[in-house]
Image 1 (tube, rainbow, N blue to C red):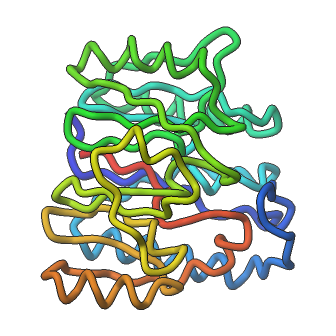
Image 2: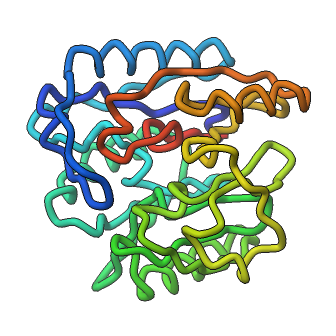
Length: 253
């Protein structure tokens, strides 16, 4: 089993052409995005993650958001089937990467569509967003596949947001943090309210280590006061495309 490996891909020079769904399009500085991505990767490495690079995909503007192409649960890798056809070519290079790791590989098939950004694993519970990108067919497939690893999939309806992880993520202790108005909280045991929008986006790097965007300073300060080791990165150019700290990597523990 590969441990503490982070899969990443450098941003395309065409990043600014990426899909925007729930926010207004803004100009993207590709050179600045490249520098921000370098700092993001450096934060992963500083936290002890071994970084593996997927091949460049300069003709695929959204390919830097690698989380959407696969869900890794223990030694099982579920290749996604993106909910937007133009992102489908991104999966092939992820499949090649997974084939080189010590993971069993399966895939979402048929009419199912799944973006990895709709999947949040918290212990033995997996919250899965019903979004414009992820449909019921895929959720049923995911539930069957992850049951083989002792996981229970809990569907969560979303309200006007891209992915489940746009609305909520989890802290290292498993407690959920998010924006209540963006999702059906009745499916959740509890949801801590983020102090700002980007405060709902937490990447767990270790037992007390978390990564958060610079656009959530109050949440970062709060987590620091709670005893977490908080790494802060500026991903402003990716936020213009509804990106967040989780979607820029696939973390394999």
